Length: 312
Image 1: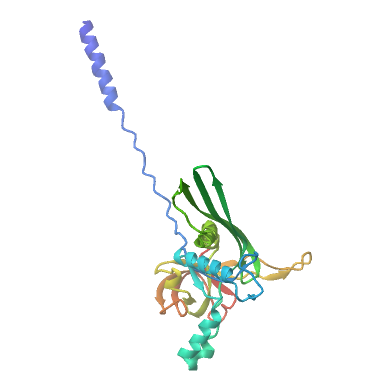
Image 2: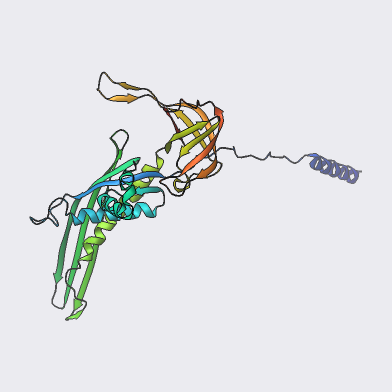
């Protein structure tokens, strides 16, 4: 009898176990969001000078600044290699315009028009020098050559003239020779150490500059409006792609502050959303995009105070 009761209990418990339904966790769907496209801004290096005593003499004037030009060239190379910006030439602009006038004299006047940029980079070499240290013993001799460099830059918003960021970078390069009982490596001062130190100093701040400029919203102007079709400047070279969603904004009113005397622009107002449906142009100079209005309204003769941006 006890055996029968035991079997019955086990069977009942088994039935209860199988009766418990498996808990089903509903799948979590990621929220669908439209990511803002990362578009290339137009930047230029306006000035980079040597503010140290290194490399200066009475025979050099302000225009002959090899150290400042070297720093500007290194910075321009890093910014171009990042492939995040359109980098325009400023330091050798006269040479470029002279060559343009030679290649196409009839269009020289038109080509001399300088394309504006969003951000201007100003900087200088603030520290630069080299030292040679050595140790001499009874049987050995050690010599260490060291070069140090420090650069400082500031980023300027061209539309307002406001300095919105500053950064510094420092770099050092060393080489060492060691001899024992007259045997080992010997060398005179390595002149390339100063070049390496300057390159390291620029590299030390390049990531900060790239991230700071890239974080600023990209914006452009409207070329023409035809019904619900908007033609805007900027195309493939700046990173625009078919299907990108952009915002149409109205510029805020500019009011002079009675307290500071500065002109303060009120926040922009969103008036619509557009989608890129076609790209045209051959280079960053003449590229544009055709966009279709998804929301809002834009008058064909009233878009002078509007702009297009990636910001939300």
